[in-house]
Image 1 (spheres, rainbow, N blue to C red):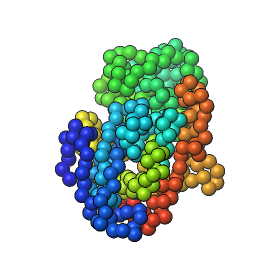
Image 2: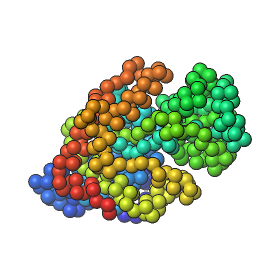
Image 3: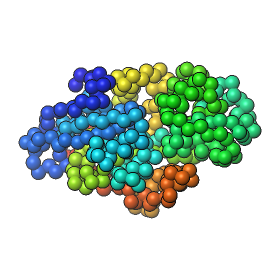
Image 4: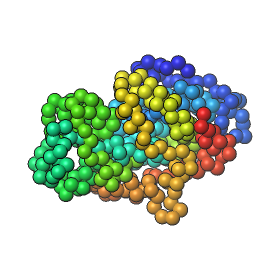
Length: 356
């Protein structure tokens, strides 16, 4: 499939002819049925690469799906599109997934990646040594630029605790992601809490370096595969097939490293982002999860799942800043139902586990 220009890739319905697809309900051959329309939402981020790879390789058609892609600049706009049914499934960050569950009945059906290391606090190069030597002394009363209700802010709060500081010890300046990058490169703030690729941009433009990440501070940041609850309940087969395609692309990435980097570079470039190989390599180190690992992350066989713990901790942070009035029970919005349906279907499972 030729690579569309960025604007076309963002807006166009990708009309894919249904080939010898794999359907979760295998009683009728896929080729005998019309492909199922499905609206897939995402942002331009590392975890959206499987969606791009699957499109390049025509895997949606093989799974009997006819996707329409809806691209958002950030999670807030993405979850706000749920009530109007602008999308059916997709991927997003964990704060939008939690807030979407509370406000718009969005369910988390899987995990995109572990973002703990790539949500981070950056410092200006000339301040690094002093901050590392005595962060409490150097940072107290200083300005930190943050995007509210974001994983960047969540990681920053964990880093402050690691340094023995509270939110009230610093001056928080809240900005949208693009404005944050512009303000920090313009000389505002001692620190900035954000995520990749913004961290790479700040490093490239002014030499800012990561001084603490969510991983460093013990904050597990997981991205979410999501669905509108109504759509998922009415179309469980389509949701299982969406997961199968996404996870096939994850397997491809894990097993074909050179092609993985080439695809990642191409995906970013067609969307106006150019990254050096060193940055691309850093992106590729993020943990991603094929089917068996997805099932383990969401399993409650021995109590709360790993995903439950990560999202509950994040919800505690959202409550602490007044975004949530209470911490929701993860069992109310995180489900492995669709992963299990995929795993229980031999044909669909084999499709999801392909490495090519």
